[in-house]
Length: 101
Image (cartoon, rainbow, N blue to C red; front, side, top):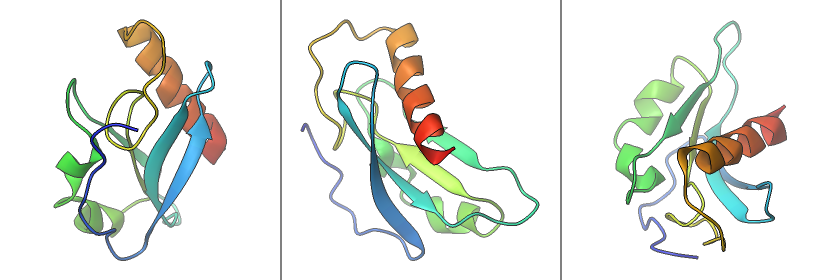
């Protein structure tokens, strides 16, 4: 795994993993659901990781369930032997969303 975020886990969050289409382990943090509010999925940019959202997570989680993932090859997720395209990153996001049902 590459460049794992080192910040402590915010209160009310847990670490989870999903498998992407190519078997890469995708790590994400997730808060508890908030009744009546849709979840928000936070997706970092190229060369970043979910740790870039660290200062926003607790505040956002007061209004809705928050999911912040590390795309393949970023943060705590596996580096996969594949092309890193927007389409394949979208498949990573779909894998996490599917794991959360």
